[in-house]
Amino acid sequence: MSKESESDPGKEFKLERYKYILQQIHTLNQNLYKYLSLFQALTTAVVGGGIAIFVSYKELKIDAVAARVGIHGLLGLLIILATFVVVAMVIGMFSWFDYRQDEVKILNEVIGTGYRKPPRFQNLWRWYETYFIAFLILMMIIISVFVETKVVPLIK
Image 1 (cartoon, rainbow, N blue to C red):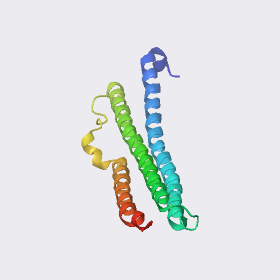
Image 2: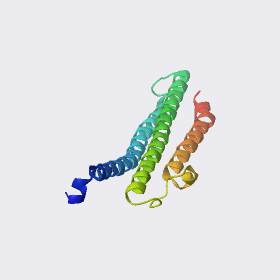
Image 3: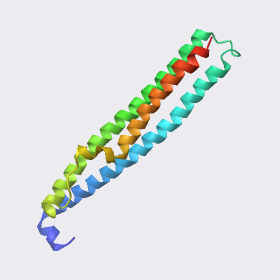
Image 4: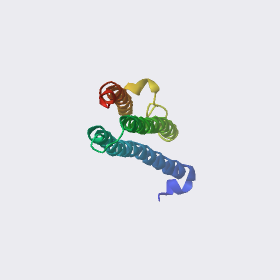
C-alpha cells in the first residue's frame, strides 16, 4: 500500500469499488453465455422429444389428440424457455448499463471528467445481446408457425 492510499481511504475505497464493478460487468457477460448454453442444451432435448412424439406416436399407440397435446406442450415449454433467456438478457443489459454508469462516475471523480463516455441506449444496435434477443424471438416465431402449420396437421 502506498503512502498516498494510506492517507486517502476514499481512493482505496474507490479502487475497490472500481474492481468490483469491472468484475460484475465481466460476470454479466459470462452469464449471457451460460444462459445460451443452457438454452441450447434444453432446446435440443425439447426438440428431440417433439420429434420422438411425432415419429413414433402411432407405434406407441398414442392417441392423435394426446400426441398433438404433447407437441403443443413441448412447444409451450420451448417458448417459456426462450422467454426466460430473453428476460435474463434484458435484465443483464439493464444491470450492465447501471454498472457502466457507476464506472464512469468513479472514473470522472478519480481521473477527470470525460475520461470515459457514459453508456447510451442509442447504442443498443451495437450490443450483441440485442442480436441474440432478436434471433431468439425470430426463432420462436418460425418454430411456432412451422409446428402449427406443418407438424400438427400431420398428426391424425
